[in-house]
Structure formats: structure tokens, C-alpha cells
Image (cartoon, rainbow, N blue to C red):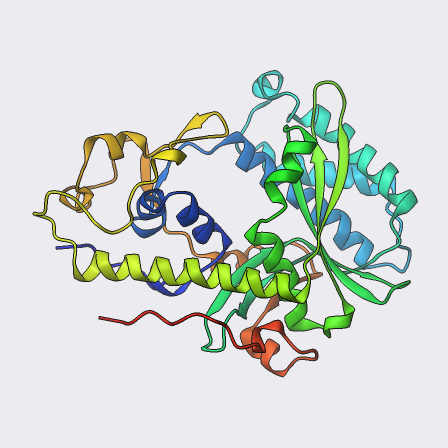
Length: 350
């Protein structure tokens, strides 16, 4: 008998799940359908969360005052916010091993960030973080999202999402990896659901590169024409449809006593990413049909923890964070791109 799945597996679609499914459906199955997730947290993940909290603090402070400039005192406070979260996971003894993503360089990079952008940025902060759900087709399918800072540019009268990314990559490779991302389209689409089309500038990736040779900063605009956004909508709905079909096969067709599982097929070209093997590689090697094993407790080194982006809405620390409700989109100003007729067919159920 297959385990009962929570609502989040079926109904809650977001960039995290769809990106995992695009990379490898079998990885999606283990991580987001079964909820088997590695117990040991990845340092890049923890560091990224702590750094995002620091930037959230910066932009929340800026939201509360008329002056668009940040100060070095703001950077100092942001570093303390970073440290309070980071030290829950990593002790001072580990700092040297984590360079350049370590507390000392983080204090430096936050100061450098404020010194640079306080001179050139002239944006007003609308929200320091934003999350929620907006429709992505005319049948009411929702995409759940969590995005970083929403800015308003007084000179042009336009709105923009500033999406923060920390990295040790080459900035050139980083830009190439994000140029066609689902997340960029999500940010642009969310703004198009909230504001008139002529007031939407789009999304800009805010790259912070922590490097041993010296830190760097780069901002990469993600811009799409109306046709380009239609292409994005078609793409994201295609993969949402595909994931629903795989769930349908898993529930209604696949059997525990079959030689192999047909739903959520493996993608052998994604077994190694970012110079690391997939955490589920050993399962794929050992099990042709995972259904014979899923009623057991998660294997050693894994825990059962289902991903539900709605839980993030309870974690906001900043007063200027905002949660978008679907009804806000329906009654809000502006005309969403989602009102276009989309060339795809909803999957059949059963």
C-alpha cells in the first residue's frame, strides 16, 4: 500500500519543485513526493538563508525612512542578524574551513555592498520580501512563490523585483545559468499580476560573489517581451502538467510488485551537479522499483520532511514583508498576462 501524500505534494506548485522535476523526475519523487531529505544541511543553503535575512534587514530599514540610501550602520546591524542565524548551525571553530563564505568576509561584503549601492541606487523599497500565490493559467492553477525585495523607481515610475543571490561561481557562468530561469519569469509575472503592464520593469538578479581574491557585485536584468512571457507561461504550465501526469501514473498505475516503477523516470544526465553527486544516486542504483521500499522509514542520513512553500509565510521577520493572496490578484489593479489564452490542454484525471 502506498503512503498517503499531503496536499502539498499534489496541489502546491512552486519554482523549487518544478526545477527539481525538470532536472530529474526521480529526484523530485524522492525529495518532494516521498519527502525524503538529507538530514545534514548544506553550508551553501544555510549561508544563503542567513545572508538573505541580512539583506531583508537592510531593505526593511530602508523601507521605514524616506532616504533611499543605506548606511554603514545598517550594514553592521545586518551582519549581526546574519550572525544570530548562522551561529545556530556553525561554531567559530569552523569559520576558517568555510572561507570565503565565512562570517569575517560576510561583514566585509555587507559593508562593501552598502558602500557601492548607496551611491548609485535611487529606489524606494516597497516590500523587503514578498511571497504568496498567483494564477498561471485561465483555469486557476496557482504558482506559489517567494521573492526578495520589490523596489519602486521614482524616475521611471516602474516596479522591479531585486532577487538576491550569493555565489562562489564565475560571474559569467552565473549569468548564463540564470538567463532563462523559471524564477526570473515568476518574478516578472508576479509584478504583472499586481501592477499595470506599463509599470512593470521586471526582475533583476542581485549577484554577490564571495571570492578569495576579493568580493564582486553584479546585477543582471531578466527582461522578457510579451511574447517571451507567453513562452515562459507555456513552459511552466507544460512542466506543471507533466508533473501531474507523473503523479497520476504513480498513484493509479505503478505497483509494488512490478519489476520497475514507470512514473518519475530517472534522468541519468543529472546525477552530478555543481561537482557533487545527487544525494539519491545510491537509491537509483539499487532500486529499479522504489515502491518496494517506501513504506519503510527513510534510509540512514535522511528524514521525512515535506516541502510546502506556504509555511514560509509564517517566517517573516521584517515588517515590510508581504504575502500575496490569490484574491488580491483578481481584484487588484493592472491586467495580468495570465488572461491570455494559453495553448495547452489540462491533463485528464483518473
